[in-house]
Amino acid sequence: MSVPVYIGNDQGYYGTKVVTRANGKFYKMFIRNMVVPNRVGEITYNNDPHNIMYREREGDREWFCGKLAIEQAGDDELFDSHKRRLFSPTWFREQEYQIMFRVSTGLMLQGSTEPVVSVALPTDSYIDYKDELKRRLIGKHTFEVKQGNLPWRRIEFEIKRENLFVISQPMATLFHIALDRDGKLLNEDLFIQKVSINDLGFGTSDIETLHGETIIKRQSFTSRHAMLNVYELLAKRLLDFTRQADPDSNGKEYPIWSLPRVVRSGEISFKGKVHDVSAIVQECIKEVGEALVNEVWNRLDYGDDITYIILTGGASIPFKPFYRERFGDKLIFAEDYGIEAQFANGFGLCKFAQSKARAVPTKDMLEAAATIHQEFHVPDSFAEAAAVTEKKGSKSVKK
Image (cartoon, rainbow, N blue to C red; front, side, top):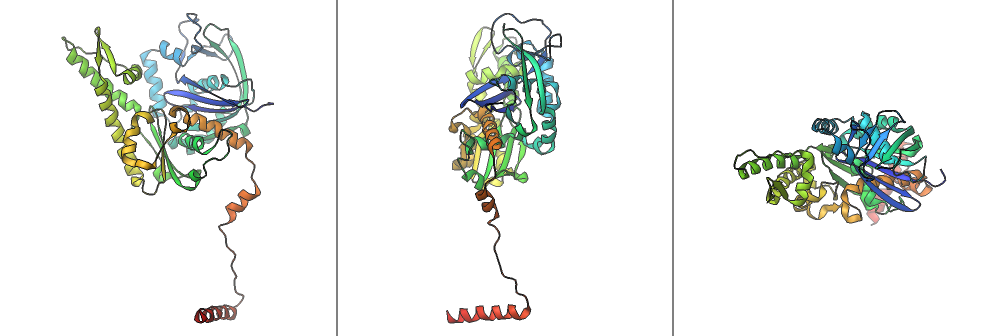
């Protein structure tokens, strides 16, 4: 590999976010996190590059990925996949995880065959499963990908042990803020102070408190208050709303996967009429946001001993006002550092890959770490110790 390519791959509940640096430029990519078997044959209706198909080799089973998978999946497949990802700390053992990792990494190689890659695990899974995840990703990856009407193309790359790094998802945002675009330390203060990173996602919210790169376990946890709870609450209230709007009181059920559009627009179309439901949406966000902040407030002991609280993740935008009200000036918003909040982890992973690949211990760093010790004199005998004490006493009298 003549020119190194650094890749940060953040595979989350809702989507896979990838950031890469190659030839001095950064690139980002989002793929909806969904994989289902191909049961409809060849897809030829347009040349959308988001219509992604995967297979090991010609003749093997084909899989739809991302947007195409969502469109072609049955409701039972969506429910099963979402449920396993949300409640299983070992989601990375599933075939879907490996396919999504291969596709998302392969599309960002920029010609490299030996990339330097960083990946992440949720807070509660990191310690227990980081080594197993490494074992599953290290090695050669060979497969074929088809996008839109383009022909199948073969992708090959190798993940070497020394080129793979696994960290916790919230810690990735710390590196996004603390490191510059070349992976060098920019904000040393974040490693000196006690910092809590709140990574608010679709299915879970990871709260990780750090001092440097050391996790403070007592103040680190995974909360079930997340954007999914907003959608579940909204689905129930929209059913009630449409029942009241329907002369026959039948109402309409809204599946979870259809609700992001409703949250963004604040509108629904029901029986030929458009209804403004923005007030209902805001009520649901407020109810879940306040519950999340209350849990964080208590688990962090009111944040009294924490210098900064960093807010990141795709769900950080709607929940930001509730954090601001409770934690005030301690709050740092990841999106203020030049990239969308949902890509903060991916960007931090990419920077982390750069910093680790180039890390060389220096004499100054070793000396700084050793300055805690102090030289002192140990007396050889009791008489010598008494003489030293007497000498100190005479000096104090002269003063």
